[in-house]
Image (cartoon, rainbow, N blue to C red):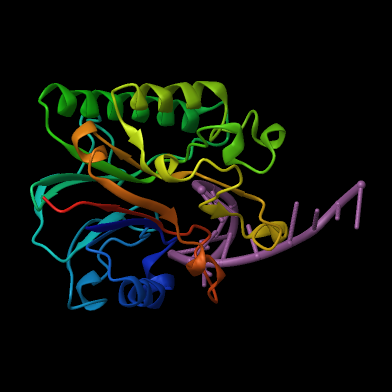
Length: 254
DNA sequence: ATGGTCGTGTGACGA
């Protein structure tokens, strides 16, 4: 079973990119982030996929494409009574719990946006902790807006005080891993300089000045089924690309 | 050394 995650940076601007990606790669599941649309007709992208989304005008928004039927578990991260940002979608398909997130960026840092990011990560910790306690196997993918380690960015000094890399952010990400989760990509590739995002500015893509911020984390029983994991940089090279590229994993069926 | 890029929706703001 092939599962991908991709921040598309506007579904309106990237409709054809997503269609092409699904056609070329035929994943069983694709999780996308940053729809930047409240009600884009996602079902018209491919008749091979069922799709479920939580959208919002202009900002955020996540969706899941799946070849198998999807059952909604929740479309907001618990613990945020006044939080109306579309960043979380939890579903069940093929007896697997799937979570798609667009974790807050948090810049500028310090400031209220960074406070929101840390609070969101704590809420995420609480939700994943609950799933672990209930022994529900799950896979969480998306744009985490977290650079886990120095080797996941081209120049750690530049990123030192950034909301994506500063120590407090990395500690909060480490806490998620300490629930017993596996960073799927790192099981199959330990090299430095493997990135999922390259800024549009300053020739970051041709210079390979990127960062690895899109992740797939697996609970233990799903991790045991992991067959492959990779970053597919091809879509970043397409015309008018997203600034992110898909991360792909494969797990053994049933 | 400086400004440099997109997307949304038309003027900043978010990334």
